Amino acid sequence: MSCKLYANIGIGHENDIEVLKTRVINAAQCNADAVVINKTTPIKLIPEEKKYLSIESKWGALPYLEVARKSELTIDTTNQLVNFCKEIGIPLIFSVTDIESLMFVMEETDTRQIKLHADAVDCVEIIRYCSERELETYVPIKYFTYVQQYFRKGKKPLLLYHTTEDFPPKIEELELSKMDKYVTQGFRVGYEGREEGIFPTMAVAYKGIEYIEKYLGEDDSDNMSVLRPAQFYDLWQSLNIMFDADQEHPSSDT
Image (tube, rainbow, N blue to C red; front, side, top):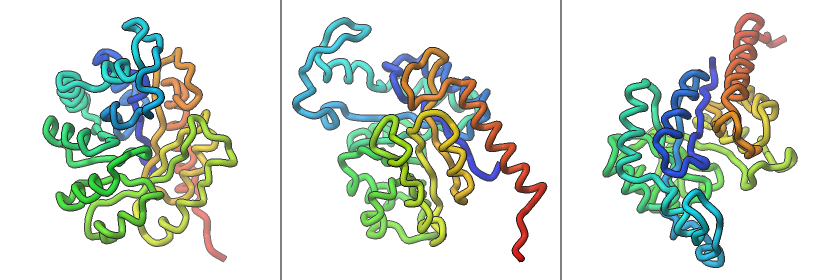
């Protein structure tokens, strides 16, 4: 297949290694090329007005910030996840939201791939750090101005990616054309799809991008942006059929 397919396994795992292992297995069985997991520092990401609101959780009623902290990846869970992905033979990419999370990942793992989360708060610091160490870095297109300061096209391992703000976005909010000029200019480009289902996602594959990332959960997932394993496999299979058909019947210029 000409376009790689990544599985983001980071939504609602609550630092439960068994949940994460199940998602890694499902991703591998669905032929995902890599899995993506978010690493955050909750106190930097949660708005002040929400930090101390009481919410229900598996630990009972707790402040929002406390639930987020309990749900965040610990050193032990991170190490187990890294080792499990190596055993399974599937690459693991960390998506970081802040410089503390980046430092955590760099200290606890041997990764050479970092994704700058679309909602990151320390964008310039993270981009600068990754550039100086020539890490393969995934950067949202909206931060392209910063990319120009620290990366030169073709000189350092950079991938630009497009995504949306909402979970899930409306179809008219996808703005898929934002990727076109970067593909035309020769940049490596990807897409993080937060839309519902798989059909809008399939249209992106024809844009000449390098990878598509979709969220993968369990069979009982009620998050409209998250695919169940059967849906994720359907996406992989559909993309495979599309690209196989193109190879069998290539278009010709007249």
